[in-house]
Amino acid sequence: MQEDLLNQISITADSTTRIDGGLLLSGPSVTLELQAAPVRYLYSGWQSWSLTAWLKTDHPVHTPRPSILHPMQVDPVHVRDRCPNGSWYGAVELPSGKIIFLGALNLDTHVALSGNDLQGWQETRADGSAPIHWFAAAGDEAEIFQRYSELLGDRLGRGRAASPFKVWCSWYSLYTEIHEEQLLKILADLGDLPFDVFQVDDGWQAGIGNWEANKKFPSGMAALAERIKATGRRAGVWLAPLLITPSSPVYREHPDWLLHRDNGLLVSAGFNWGEPLYALDTTHPGSLEWLAGLMQKVRSWGYDYAKLDFLYAGALPGKRHADMPREAAYRQGLKVIREALGEAYLLTCGAPILPSIGLCDAMRVGPDVGGHYASHRDDMLLMNFAAPGVRNALRTTLHRVWLRPLLHTDPDVVYFRTVLNDLSSSQKSILQDLAVVCNFKATSDVPAWLTPAELAALRNFLGTSPAVTRLGPQTYSIEDRRVDFAPFIDMPAPPGPVTNLQGAIISGLANIILLEKLFDLSGRIALRRALRNHPV
Ligand code: 9PG
Image (cartoon, rainbow, N blue to C red):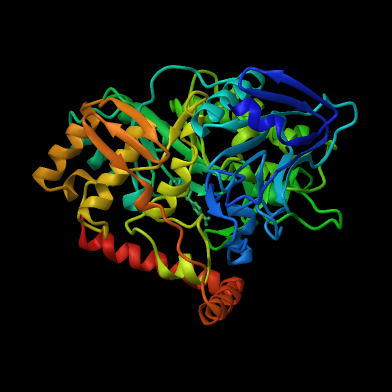
């Protein structure tokens, strides 16, 4: 049946070979000429947080706001493309309901729908690089992705097979307001809850690019790892190793390690922590050596679970010490990191998807969750679906469950608490169901914030492994319950002209660095106040 459909499509490629489940095409650019105008397009976001979803083709292609966040939320190279498009792969749904898929088996590739042509091409070719291969298929979405994941795994490798850990992560309760004494209190309060990993998130470091304990961790990071391991758990730690901020020593001492533009200025990797962000050039021998040393240091402190974040920075477009395509350059850096981490478990986050396959054990496959479901500001004014929030996280994660044979798919944390949380009980449960579908369980809930019933629900969640079966697109059975995620992940209708104008104004303000800093500061003040009212 699917072969028939592919026979009806005229294909332009250097070569076409029939393989199990579809066609193997080769060539730096290929085209599938479709017979009818598609009704939906499967957008494939570049990195963990980027929107990935089936969207209607009669919706305009939107550019998320504000642009200052583009490098850290989407692929900045394609953010203003007007055709439906995505990184490495794309698919269309024809009016008949049939799905046609085109996916690259090489990095630095892109797919777009131009008129009725589904096109794939490689952005940059390195001299003498291997031929580019593509998988083209038609038919059932789940079967197509099953086959695509096999082909990718054969080329890029797979994570180490052991089952994922149950993780307590500090971020979604305490954010950057973590300190030693408070984390030790939580560690003690976790008691015999079956967490395998206690993961210290952002907030322990002296600075981004300055990976030493700050004043809030007076005993140091090795002592903390020791205390964690004494409870029988793995010690986990967060780092953003490929980011450099102006306040970090690397910025002052090794400007040549940073990713530059052709005009000699630095490539922006976004804006966060009240500072502009820059990227390490992962082809520079100096930065590679520094990265390996950093990973060895973290290992020597006793951490054997690394959440490495903001990794997209290594794959941004720019001028590199060694001239090579940006994703190949990133992969070279990740390989060095992986080797230096030895046996430690590696969770990648903010990571370009295909270039990370085979070099990590787990990957965050959606944007951050948060104590809210969705926001008018992000959905309607900014059209930003990479922003933190449960609906954004559900939507993108569900479209990436197909990666499960290749790595552990991290959907981000779930919540059981009512304290400092606006989610309804059905929103909390659907998020818990997502974690079960992804087979990755984590929370940031502070035991002291949980009622006895919430604590019992958390214990039950961690202690059980319900059977999951996929029933259809976005529908699963979990034990004997049918769970339909579709109503939870609808895309809001595009904004009207007035809302759009309001959004443009807000976005313009958000692009002003001083206002970004104020926004950051006001967030911190609100958080401190909330934490004062809710002691851990
Ligand atoms: C720590 C956090 C947590 C979290 C990560 C990541 O687009 N953004 O502005 C953006 C900022 C932060 C962010 C995601 C997106 O969160 O996903 O789990 O570790 O960093 O700072």
